[in-house]
Image (cartoon, rainbow, N blue to C red; front, side, top):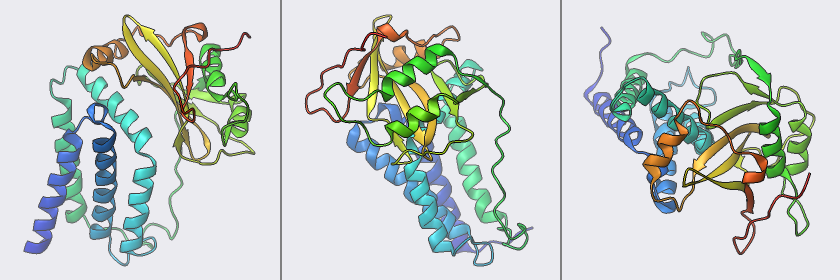
Length: 282
């Protein structure tokens, strides 16, 4: 049986409690400042957890730098992480789990504790190099409706200029495919296998959203950029929507469908006054 010092046991307990507490939070219900604090807290806990459980022999760089790197990557991918979190919670609801966040919090806390109990493999034991990330998910052709919506988001503003990274993303759209998974109709995971141009900034929420209404609820379409490539198209409940829970239930319905092109209006984040750019005729 693995022995553990009282100090390490205390850190294990604190880490497991912090991970569990963060997992219990519903990020979509947070305001701008509390959501920013939640993201920073999640990144900090991730970084500290890696730094505290990684040995000198098992570190990629060294434990402290590995922790900083993990925290930075975690913070940069929070948009995608929160989208995935929502789909997982919705999926558990559909499976009949009454309190999915409590279940996920328990799993997260157990995972954090395991990092303190399971020895970290050394660099040599891992083969001396990072294992490649293999994406064996099946992909299918992107529906034209989805392609048209993304193309609308990537269009230059009507008042001239263009958003940074837009030309690169427009070239990717022609060959992009979607992942064939049952993750719910409100999210579409995009795959760009090969491209000569990457968007900069490489990880971002696209500064153009598409607003629309359905069944009396207000939604927005958001595009995520991951590693300079098209990453995900997601339906989000609009910030000003008061009946958030009911709107989320609509998105979780298996028969939910994305809006048609003529049903949306575009909103550019860079505009000083929020006024929609109505779609041009095609």
